[in-house]
Amino acid sequence: MDKIAFLITRPEHDEATYYLSNWSESSIKLAELKGINVIDLHLNKANSKEVESRLNKLSPGFVVFNGHGDENTIFGHKDEPLITLGKNEKLLASKIVYSISCSSAKNLGPESVKAGAINYTGYDKDFFLVFEPEKFSRPLEDKTAKLFLSPSVLFVDSIIKGNKIKEAFDKSKNLMKDNFRLSLSVDTDSSRFLWWNIQNFKSHGDVEPSISHI
Picture 1 (cartoon, rainbow, N blue to C red):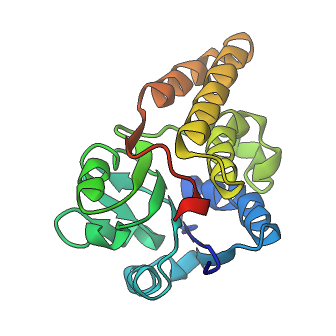
Picture 2 (cartoon, rainbow, N blue to C red):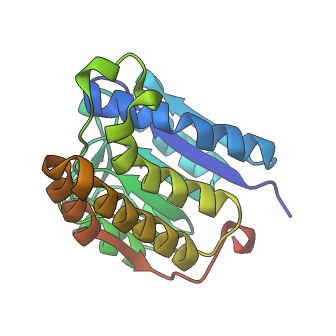
Picture 3 (cartoon, rainbow, N blue to C red):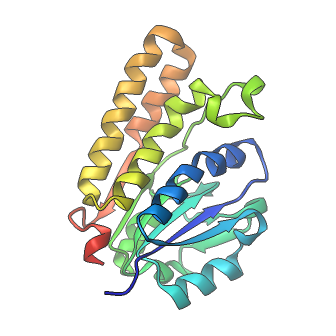
C-alpha cells in the first residue's frame, strides 16, 4: 500500500489563523511519528497554486484546512481562495476533509461529497474562537483558546490514529460538550460561543471509513 499522505494548510496572517496554525503543530508531529507523509502548507505556501498542485500530484487521503471561509469557499494565506464551489471542489474527490473555517460545511461541504469527497467535516455557520490577548505570544498556554481548539485537535489526531470518521467526530463533539460545561463555571461569555460551535459542527458523506481504508 502506498504511504498515506496528509495535507494541512496553515496560513498565519491574523490572530485567528495564527492560533489555528500553532495549535496544529502537535498533529503534524503525530502524523510524522505515525509514518504519514505530511504536506505542510505553512504561511504563504497556503495558496491556491500549491494546494491544487499537491492535491493533484500527491493525492493525500486526509486534508485539513485552517483558515477563514464562507458557505462556498475555503481561504488560505491572506484570504486567497483555495477551494471554491463551482470551480475546483472536485480536487477533494476520494479524500477525507476537515475544514476549520466559518460556514464552509453549509454548501461547499455537501457539494464536495457529491463531487467525490469521502467525507467533509466542518462548520455550517461561523466558527468562534475566543482567546486571551495577553497569551498571544504563547498560544498553546491559552486556556480559553484551548476550550475552542482542543476538540479540533482531537478530531485531526483521531483520524491520524486510524479512527473511523464517526468515532473521531463523536470524540470531538463530546469534548466540545465537556468544554462547554467547564466554561459555565469559569467564563459565561465563552460558553455561548462554545455552544454555537457545537450546534454547527457537521459531517457530510460517509462516516465509516478511516485513513487506513483510503
